[in-house]
Length: 193
Length: 335
Image 1 (cartoon, each protein chain N blue to C red):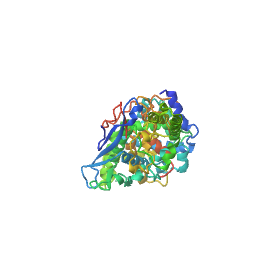
Image 2 (image 1 turned 135 degrees about the vertical axis):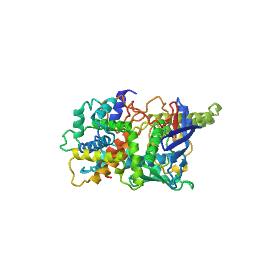
Image 3 (image 1 turned 90 degrees about the vertical axis):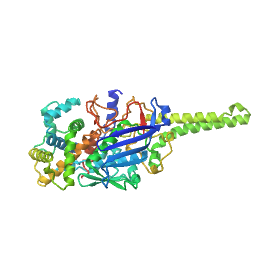
Image 4 (image 1 turned 180 degrees about the vertical axis):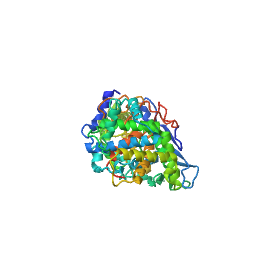
C-alpha cells in the first residue's frame, strides 16, 4: 500500500472531527501522568523518551529535551503550565512512545503488579514490597514537585492514582496497548471513573 | 482441521477451524473457526490448577468482547487525576468520531452485544481481582463464574490480541435487525442482479416453451450460473468493504454470511462483532487491508504504520511478546 494512500485514508475520518483544544489538554495531562508513572517505576528519563521517539521516527516532533519539556509542561496539571497546545500528532506520538517504553519495561511492570496482587490478597499495604514502596514514593514526590497543589488531593489519593496507573501500564505494554491507550484517552477522558 | 494456539504466561487459546468455501475467492486458503478452547491457570473459584473453557466462535467473540471491553473500561480516566476538570462526556466521543469504537465496551450500554447476549460479563472485585461471569460458557465443572487476577486478565488480552492480529475474522452469522440493515445495500445489489438473471432465464424458458424450442430449456445450468454470478458479485462488493469500521486489520466477511456455514442459534441476537468488523474476506494475506475509519489523524506518512495494527501503529522494532505464537503467515484463518 502506498504511504500516500494510507495517509489519505487515515486522515479522512478526522478531516472534519478534530478533538477540541480542551480535550487535547486533558489528553495531554493523562499522557504526562502515564510517563510519570513510567519514570517512577522504571526510572526512565528524558533520554529514554527521546530515544524511543527516535526509534519510532517521531524525532521530528520530539527532537530534544526542550521540545519534550515544552510538550509535557503543557499539561494543565503542571505548575505554571505553558500555553502550548497539544496537537493530535503530538498526542499520537506520546501514545506510541509511552507504549513502547511500557513494552520495554514490561518485566518490571508485571513484577510490580504481581506484588500488588499478592499484598492486596494478604490485606497488606503495597509499601511492604520495596519495588512498590519505591514506586509510590517516587510517584508522589515527583507529582508534588511538578503539579499544582490540589487542596482536595491527599497522599492516599496519589497512591491510588499511582496504583491504577501501574495497572494501566501493564495493559499498555501488550501488543494492543497503544490502541487501548488512545481509545481510553479519547473515549473516557470525560466519563469519570 | 487446522489448530492454532496462542500462549501467554497463564493462559492458552486454542482455536480449531477448517477450510471455508471462501477459499474459492482467495489466493490463500481461508479457514473458519469452528470451536475454541481456553486454558486458564489457577483461575478457578475452587483453586483448581487449570480451568478449561470451550465453545464455538460466537462464544469466543462474546468472550473477547467482554474481556476487551472490560479492560478498556477499567483504564484510568483523565478525571481520576486530582484537580483535573472533567470534560463533558458527549463531546469526548462524538467529536472524535469514535461511535464505532464504543462497541468495544459491552459493560457500558451495549446491551445487544454478543457478550451481553451470551451473558458473559466481567466485574471488578477491588483493584486487582476480577469476576468473569461465564454465561453461555458455564459448565458444571467450572461453574458459572471464575476469578481472574489482573495478570491473568492481561494474559487473556495478550492471547486475544495475538489471535486478532493473526486472523481474518469472520463474524458469527448475523440475524438482528441492525445487522440486516447494514447488509441491505450489499445484498440488495447482488440480489437484484441475481433476480434479474433469474427473471431473464425464466422468461427465456417460458419463451422457449412458447415457441417449442427446446434449446432454450437449460434453466438448471443457467440458474447455477446466476448463482455463481450472484456469489461473485457479493464477494466483490464485500471485498470493496465498508470503510466505516474502525479496525481494518482484520478483514472479515461482514457482508458474506451466505458463503459461510449455518448460523449458530446463540448468535441470533448478536450484533456485529468489534473483532470481526472488517471488510475483506477475499483479500490475500499479502495485501494490506484497506484502511477505514481510523481514530488517528495522520498528516504525514510514517514508515512505522503497520497495516495489521493500525490503531495506532506499532513500531517495527517493537518486540513481540516472546511467549506468544501468532498465526503463521500464508493462512487466512476465519473464526
